[in-house]
Length: 176
Image 1 (spheres, rainbow, N blue to C red):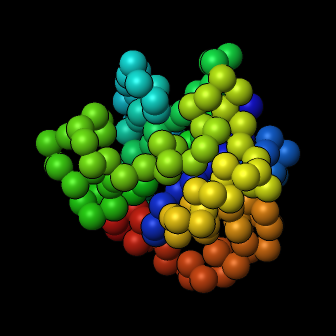
Image 2 (image 1 turned 135 degrees about the horizontal axis):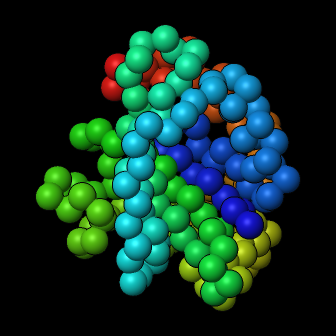
């Protein structure tokens, strides 16, 4: 039941919202940038986000033979379903933790959306872009306001982000 995927710069923000859109964007991305996972190290944690992974994707169509290292965090609901995925390039300057020794984001000061968006990490893990809690949070946090705007108008926001990214965002995001 992945409800939301929120990769951060240089990747496209909000690459999926709702199961249907997730399936559609997943199919589109796989058709345009086929990849295999060449490395995966996932760990479980007692606090949200309950799962955190370091993975490397090898993209066939890039032809450089280099992996693309990604750091991901997974937030769950009480039924054990993933409801939010946050992803960053696994490279200095892109990760959510400033402390380079905190490789799994366990320390204080980790900058993640999953702990800021009302509804995530709850019993259902559902959010409501039209809801009062999210509107209140968006009124005081520009990142949440950006998230809400994208969630309310997913496809146009995704297309705009994709167009702005340019042809070399894989190179930038993967550190090639």
